[in-house]
Length: 310
Image 1: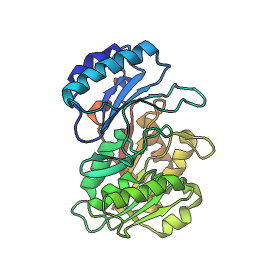
Image 2: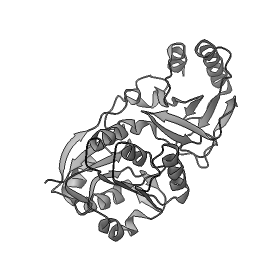
Image 3: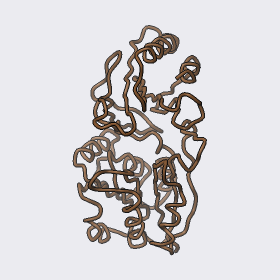
Image 4: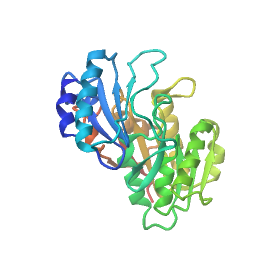
């Protein structure tokens, strides 16, 4: 983790949540198993291989020195989370120093989102999808009350952003009622719990009739898990989603497609779209946040925009 230790003295976290070090991108040889995130006021060190006690001690010492410079006298808060690839029953995140606020909300571009750093593998806000949320905000702003379908909505960050920008209606769909409950709290936190959002704890694949009748939509967000045992396998199920897009989108409507798999490149989505919904037109691939830069763009998160022609 030497590259991370070398970078720590110059790190300058901002007011918003962000990725600060992305060893997974392969740009720091020898540090591929490490990432560092900032969820104010807490640092989250993630390792994708077992961490040695000496490594954690070296990180703690370097982080302590930097924190003393950034916030003299303030208590240091940091978490270590081991997410060893292929490991069954991954270890729970460990609070190494300090304490977390409860509830814990972090900012992004003027919005606030609840996070839970000590529960489960995901923290409540996917930092790598920031440019996707910015794209939706920009697209919705200045319109006439856009209608948005947010599939695999998780904690509904896309919905919050769309409603802040002036969307007329957002339909959030996720199998997890717990995730949608957090989504409702996120709407209340941002003052957009005004009846424009709906929350459906449904299996997307069993709800096409209901979703189609509720359309057409100006925007459809597709950000599914790449593998979720018993519910979603990207290679098999993503094409099934794409097949439905023309029936969900209004003429001129746009779809945001996210593919976060190092094994599947953007060609998988392009070929699947050409086969399942040949009338859809490719618009662009969104850039990932600079902190998530990768030596191989096809291994990194792919966020593609497609449109239904007028």
